[in-house]
Image 1 (spheres, rainbow, N blue to C red):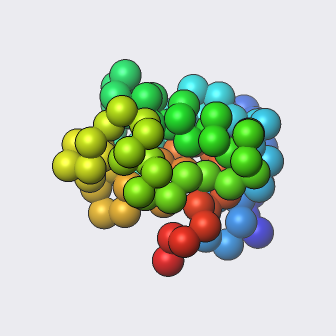
Image 2: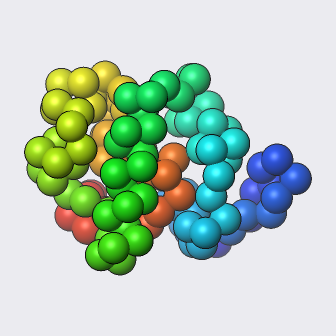
Length: 105
């Protein structure tokens, strides 16, 4: 487990870099995590994905698979890979402050 201080808040992360307590998440933390992931400034389209992932996590206890993400978030696959290059479900989950989605390698 790793601890980081982001915006004067101490946050615990698991060994894969996912927050261990999603309730500590905020948009400011998301912005800092996006910078770490090389995403840059988050847009409304990023937040469409992030908000969908957080909602799914809160309702089901797990983030959506890449397939559900592309079918139900309103963000097509090609755009999803542009927004979160190099593993969109994992990167979006990290930035959303939730655990790694089931099925992600």
